[in-house]
Amino acid sequence: MATEKEIVVSGIRSTGYLHLGNYFGAIRNYVRMQEDFNCYFFIADWHSLTTHPDPKDLAGNVMRMISENIAAGLDPEKVALYVQSDIPEIAELYMLLNTVAYLGELEKVPTFKEKVRLQPGNVNAGLLTYPVLMASDILVHRGTHVPVGKDQEQHLEMARHFAVRFNNRYGADLFPEPQAFNYGDNLVRIPSLDGAGKMSKSENQMATLYLADEDDLIRKKVMKAKSDSAAGGEMPESVVNLFQLMTLVSAPDAVKKFREDYDAGNIRYGDMKKQLAEDMVNFIRPIREKTLELQQDKTYLNNVMRAGADKARASAADTLQQVRKLIGINYY
Ligand code: ATP
Ligand code: MG
Image (cartoon, rainbow, N blue to C red; front, top):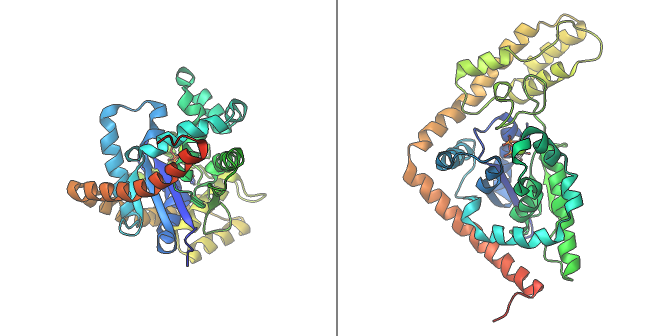
């Protein structure tokens, strides 16, 4: 059982549809953690602003992601499920933590360099300070466990640096050092189907499997996935990727059969992908259908968001009161 100290915080940017990477890297862990920990899960709408989304898309994106999280198994009665922008204390902490984050270290973050490459016309300061906002999301609840995918490992390390620096600067032990968490041994990284990078909400969309994809689209994407023409030798990355996906959604016997075929040098990738496609369809369909059903009930979703914000704000306000006191911003 969790002790009082075990606080889980994690968020997903409202930049598009949820995909298998979000599910296996994050949400699957959320669903298990909600039983044992004190959980804060949020839709990171502020984080999505760095890519300048159309204002009229925001509300719809946020509502859909709340629905997708619940459809994937999150219970808003057990966790605080909220929207980041409902908690102004996060912005306050972000501003304050910017004073213990250094330009040099922020410029070195690989995901920042990647964004500079991807959107050279929009290298805004929000991209640079993304790790500071992420640290604020976690530290505002004094989070100890952060279920994230492998792509977030380095951001989390920075959150630990900021926490320690703040503690040292103000001679306190207010912030714990948050650790990445996954129920498996390793952090998960779900590769994109074309083998280039990871599955993603905002990039690689034809090579990403979304929880909203229709059955036929799932089949089409899986059948087009990169495999390998010749068997034998060291397993190519594209085939490793297919086996990884299969292990997540197919019966162990099916995985074993194709693995034996591979070892024997007579694997038929067409058959393997057909099996994977059907298992993927069966995995995704119930989540997609449940999401559509939840999206019809706006009153329910509004109530979930309000209740989540109330829980999160109580915890955030308590932290900020202590932060202000330590910094000396408590004049009255
Ligand atoms: P974007 O392309 O907008 O950055 P994203 O797909 O990377 O979207 P995020 O909102 O950045 O999703 O991340 C949400 C969570 O999903 C994080 O915990 C992240 O580690 C995890 N995640 C994202 N992509 C993958 C992936 N391909 N494999 C495993 N985990 C992932
Ligand atoms: Mg991302």
